[in-house]
Amino acid sequence: MTQLSLAQASQIITAALAKSKEMGYQPMGIAVLDAAGNLKAFASEDGASMFRFDVARAKAWGAVAMGVSSRTLAQRAKDNPNFFVSLSATAQGKFLPQPGAVLVRDAQGALLGAVGASGGTGDEDEAICAAGVAAAGLVSG
Image (spheres, rainbow, N blue to C red):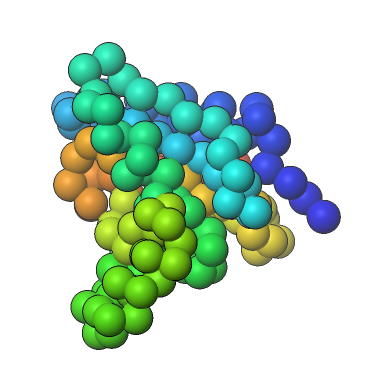
């Protein structure tokens, strides 16, 4: 079974931050989790608020826990809000169904983890996560 390495997680973060800077986004926080939802790596740019870690991690945690992007979770939450409120409570605040996190898979499609970002709009956060995953030679979803 393939596992997400620290080198890959670091590469995802470095490339995601480079994409954010290129696009002129606000200071970001980026969390990379392994397939079990454990934190593999995190970075917070100078000037990022203290909430960046919690939000980025919660987006990624929800994605890896449910096996879909946080964008998909946000849509599902609109369709079934009571379930997602209960799920967030059950997860003790570790679950945030908002755009800004993507799954990380290897070339064969095996789930390696997820990466979440916080600092911009959901679209901006998601875009830099996907850019980071691609730069690491992995597949986002």
